[in-house]
Length: 162
Image 1: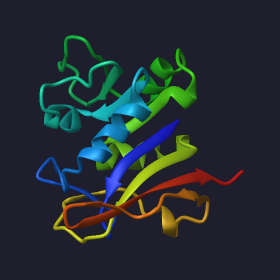
Image 2 (image 1 turned 30 degrees about the vertical axis):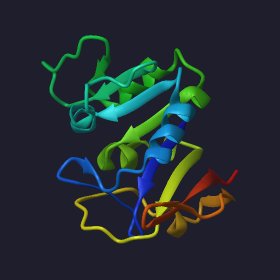
Image 3 (image 1 turned 120 degrees about the vertical axis):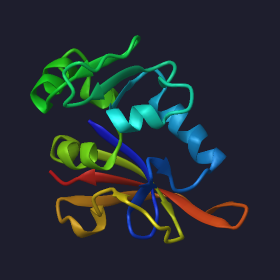
Image 4 (image 1 turned 180 degrees about the vertical axis):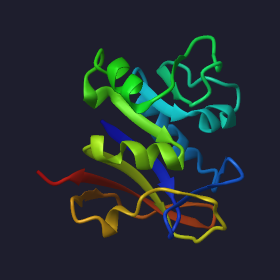
């Protein structure tokens, strides 16, 4: 499975259920990488998406609320139920898209992470695991520096060591 996220200098990903930065090129990259794939997310992440479901993808929502339903999405209520649901898909086609608790719960099951590193420290209340501090993960690719107005960022790919 894959992880995909935009993080700030402290691996922050959000504040009050909103992304920290709005970078059009990063959104385009997200769409390109996840198009036609499976997007796994928590309930709060789903509810933060403008317009609802991520179009052109299988949306899988993880929530503890047994009564929660979303038309057009698969709703699961445990990691075990999620794993069973994902057996129908090639693991390379599965992208964990947030939020913080879902990233932490599924980190061990993933082998590739597509991270947009933003060169700024925001106020945040949701975080992605710091892959630079985890010995089982290594950076395998890094783009040249990108800019969006006054923001500097780059794309980094991490892979789990064998």
